[in-house]
Image 1 (cartoon, rainbow, N blue to C red):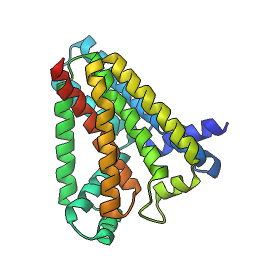
Image 2: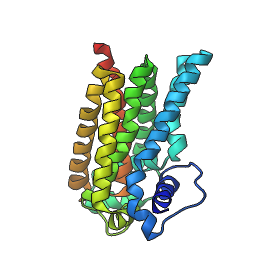
Image 3: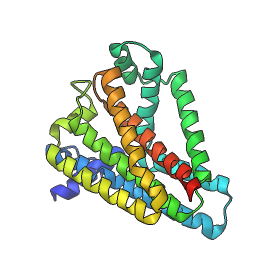
Image 4: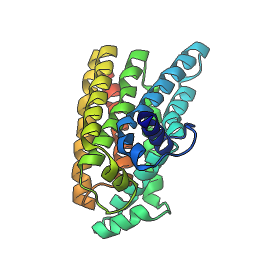
Length: 254
């Protein structure tokens, strides 16, 4: 029962998938991060299904890429994009740490958030137009799982920038050891699937994600004094884009 509650807690918080209400009691939160990457599995499955429909019905590549770029947002509800945009606003302010943290709390979107959002969707759309085979796509969608596994691990391991907030709540309540072990299992499994599906492209998946994770830790500590929920979203979005780009560019070597 506790596992089911933890899964429902993860999905109710980090996705728009119907799971029958919200579960934030202490027991469910304790293991919620362990199942956060499962949302990435759902997104990956949706991307593969959409590719199958695209080929079956012979849609144009523009329609395919547009829907493919929208699927992660439609399933997640945009919670990670929101963090990405807020963080881009904060980083572009070039203010001190307190000012950046204040910007993260500001519900309004600044010009840099809008610009960053447009650039992100343009790049994601363009990358999906370059996906030529189902094998390449399989390698690329592993990033949806790996990014969430790394985000969960970072959430419980990295220093928090604030003493409050959703990420801090989940961090304090989580079983750190269980989250780290489960995250490693997800990462290894997803990377293995990527390599098995397309060895050349898959070989670049984990290094791309690792570089994004290292940059996340560096930026979070340097600019904000630690991590927040918004920064976790910023990392997740950039990690997924990094993996997608790695697959596209490594695909030219095949």
